[in-house]
Amino acid sequence: MNFEEQLSAKVQQVNDSLLSALPSREVKPARLHEAILHSSEAGGKRLRPVLLHAAHDLFPGSTDPMPAAIAIECIHTYSLIHDDLPAMDDSDTRRGQPACHKAFDEATAILAGDALQPMAFELLVSGYQNIPEVALDLVRMLAETAGSMQLVGGQMQDLLSEGQEPSADNLKYIHQNKTAAMIRASLQMGFRLGEKGGDEDLITIMGEAGNSLGLAFQAVDDLLDVTQTSEELGKDAAHDAESGKVTWVGLLGEEKARELATTHTEDAIGKIEQVGGDNAFLLELVRRMLERTH
Image (cartoon, rainbow, N blue to C red; front, side, top):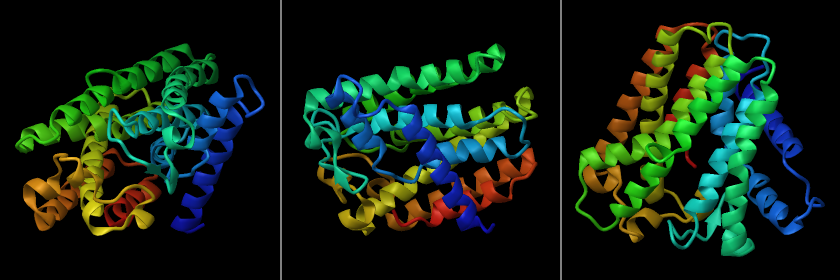
């Protein structure tokens, strides 16, 4: 299969597994599970679970990476639901459809996000109960990533920085934690499940690759926010500027922001090549992330 076919197959596998893992609409309380499925079925790139699979496939082992992939997608989806709330980023659309709080209500959206968090850790514990040392590592990685000093902390700092004088150090802190942390965790968790998952030096390098890739991803996101339409993005375009958010485009301008994305991408590619293994798919995915249009 060529790259597009491999990517499509991986995304479909993630979609099927995610919907199989989540409670159906018939399970009480039905409204809560309808809200969870509304946000989960909306599609999206499934970038984080695909990255996790690609990292595992560098040195593939016999352990199925899918439970970990679904777990990280649950955390990602919860974060999007909460980010869109009026008290946060106040976005009306997500993945081309009404945000969860617009399709339902704010209280239901909050609870849908709340429910997805323990689901993620339940998936890790049940999926890897026969290899407790690996399960413990995965739970630790995801818990640290989703906590107050990374994902949630980055969102807090993002809110505190609205309307403030932009600074490169502050912006890098926000992006390393709000965006790059989850991409870093995707690569490290996937690699941990492979044949060389016990090599701490290689896991560290994968983390460095994930950090650079996450910073590149956010720089591209900032560019798309000012160059694409809401229909093309599947979410509110120009929302960052309207809400006074700090972005690389606002701080550096479009040309420098594009150069920054390229530099971080090249660094991520170098780190992945340093790790080695069957990296053709992952390297191509990293290159495509720089060129994406939504």
